[in-house]
Each structure stands twice: as structure tokens, then as C-alpha cells.
Image (tube, rainbow, N blue to C red; front, side):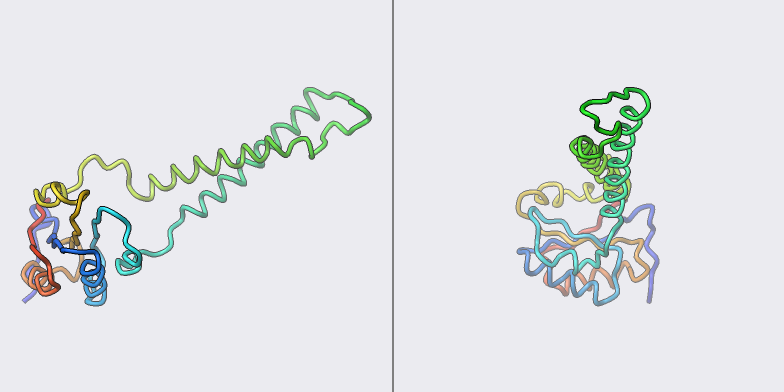
Length: 183
């Protein structure tokens, strides 16, 4: 019987695992079982965990490219306008807008705008800054997540989530402990 969790009280179930391989295997099994709103927490990166969680491509590289090209165009345009309109100087018979001398500043403006675009788009798409997250309500997580703990959290917002069935599912994956994460 499918029971709807109270999303105002329960964020989900948090399972703790002994090692990264067990976490990776459990995450893949949860994804194969149909869970999509879940997250894994580890003290170091684990190869293959992003794929097991079902992460897909994001827009950060696209925004970075657009920001870099826009910055390069703005840098070049600024110099061309200044040298062609405001500060026209005939030096050695060269044309006022001579593109080779604009390359360094054009490049630097492109890199600067690309870096800012990457930072801002990453923060916006990740929902940062996020001063509060329910997983820190779990004492075991707060103690061990950044030292030696491997955690998988199934969120109650997932359509596949069932309060009783999901807990039994996590226990069957070899979790050391399964605890509730209060919202």
C-alpha cells in the first residue's frame, strides 16, 4: 500500500554505508528501481556516482561560452570604438582600427567574462547560496559526512517514494543504518 509522506515533516530517508563501492551499488540499484529525487554524500569524489544518480548535462558550459564570446566582442568593440572614433592616431601609416594590437585585451575580456559567467550560472543553476538544508538535521550525517561517511538520501518528493517501502528498500541494500531526515 502506497502511503504519502508528510513533506512538511519528512524530507526523506538517509542511509549510511560503510564504503564507497556499497554506496555506488546502492545508488545504481535505487536509480534502476525508479527513484529520481535522491542525492549521495561522500567525503571525496567517487567515479561513476554521477551516472548512478542520473545526473544529466547542464547549461553551465553553454553560459560560459556565451559569456566568453560576449566579453571578447565587448573588449574588441571597446578598443575599436576608442581607436577609430575617439582617439584616432596615425602612427606609421597604419589604419586606426588595426585588429592585431587588440588581441591581448580581447582575449583577457573574453576570459574574464567567461569566468564570471561560469561562476554565476553555476550558482544560479545549483540554487546557491542555500543557507539551510534538511540533511543537516540528521545528527549522524552532520558528524560523519565530511570525514568518513557515505550517505544516500531518498527524498520524499520523489513520486516513487513510499515511507515504509523506501525504508525497507534501503535496508535491503546493505545500509549500516537508515534514519529519517526531518524537513
